[in-house]
Amino acid sequence: MKKPAFRKKSGAAEAPASAPRPAAAPAARPGRFGGAGGGTARTTQSLLAAAVVLAAVVGIAELRPPAAPAKTAVAAAPTTAQVERTAAVCPQPLQGLTGSTTLTAYTPPGTGSATGGAGWLSDAAAPAAPAAPAPTGSGTPSAPATPAAPTTPAAPAPSGSGTPSAPVQDKNAAPADARLTLAKPGTPVTGPAANGDAAPGTGAVATGSPAPGFTVTQTTVVTEQRGLGLSGLTCTPAGTSFWFAGASTAPDRVDYLSLVNTESSAAVVDIKLYGDKGLIDNDAANGLTVSPGSSQSVLLSTLSKGAVTDLAVHVVVRSGRIGAALHAADGGKGADWVPASADPAPTQVLPGLPADTAAARLVVWAPPEDDADLKIQLSGKNGWFSPAGNESIHVKAGMVAAVDLGKVTRDEVAGLRLTPSDDKHRTPIVAGLRVDRAAGNGKTDAAWLTGTDPVGARATVADNRAGASTLFLTSTGEAATVRVTASAGSGGGTPAAKEVQLPAGGTVALPAPEPAGLNGVFALTVETVSGGPVAAARMLSLPAKDVPMFTVQALRDDRSTVKVPQAGQDPGVVLR
Image (cartoon, rainbow, N blue to C red; front, side, top):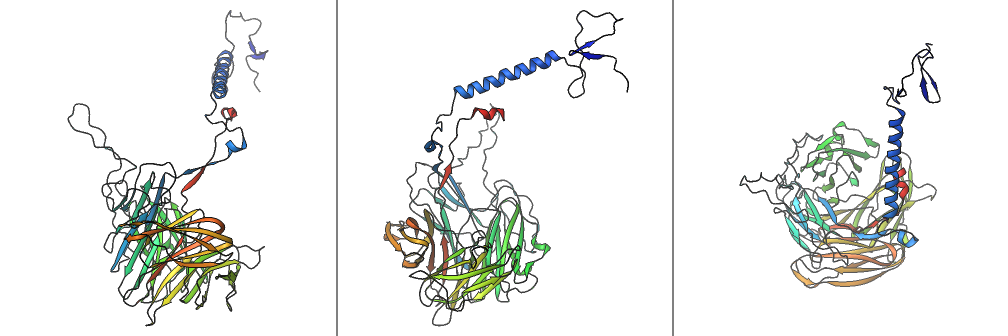
């Protein structure tokens, strides 16, 4: 190895003895990353400067503590605040059949301090110019996107040009082209959805005081023989994962997914179908692109590779967010929206079985990792019991199992619960239940129930009609007390409230209380006063043409409040 021309001694470079020593030669030193010597002095000065700045930052952090220092356990506890914005997505309204669809929006009156804002519903459209639509895997063209009103102001004209700038749009105000506008909490608003076979889905937004508890219900009456029935659902927030159990591609069934993108960017979606033999592979179900502001319908029969009687459907969004809904129609036997299930869990509760249930079919999916052995129980007026002959169900891993329960309620209202047969073997599942009601003339309609979360503090369903709504309340744990409030009508009326006692594990059905002087539609709000937890569902019954048309929607916690953590003083954060 070649000997260096200089050697270090005590941190300085020393010249050979025969060479003259310069009077003020700086020390030569390799740089840290291999550059020429920058000098120890400059490095030391930089470090000293950094130390001074750091000391100043720490000093400021010490001298200017947070406005509300968290020094006690009480101060450190999270606080509760009302949400300031709520959004939901409703599916395409008419499903290509002749019918009548209405949208109803409502926010229960609150006690929070939020003011201003508004709620509104608009046909789904992109906030900016939509991208070119990509072909769907089903071969069904997507509905054309409706151009949206600009959401940002145009750039102001140069000074002195004489051209006025565009007005700034208030982000908390309803757009000029809104289909419905909710000005304040406490009174629902209702109106028709878009018409036509290619009608787009609907985006719903509430800000300010209408945001906490804002809910939207979509209801469709179809009187054609094929697709005959009442279809209803509560519109759900956009998301990235949706589960549905109870779909089918049997010969008489026409089931399809409605995918609605109200976001400003495209979404890429995979649709996974599970049957009695497991996952149904189909490349056409993967990588569907839903353009901004567009709505697509995907017929399940184009994805299933043959007729499959019972299906579980998982919609997975790889990028972006969408609203997803599944509609089922069984020829002239009935039709409805299949509600999205709660996330897979070892226990699923399905409230809302009418006393006059003529037939019921239970569909359950288990994950690929493990089988599921489940107990089937009904909640009657006095508590839980197992239906004779249908006490349990076994579901193979990654597959769907189904069982016909027949007239399982035996003229009593009920809720259904699935729990692990062995508490040590808790496999998360998804479950759905088809319920049929029949008239004396043999005509029927169907509705689909699903696993749902408890009501929690408060839950609301918006579209109720005089003499047509029934509430099903199931206490899944200890005895409970709930308060049921009927809002004012959309056209007038005085709110009414009623408290209901529920036995432990019991189910109670009651005709919905109605506002005095009701004019129009009204909303129902359920609050847990004590005990519980409580699962709830609302049945809307609108007989037409001698058909017992009905639909059932579960009520879920409206999540009108959020937990806000307290910030504590921590000067050490500048050192991490």
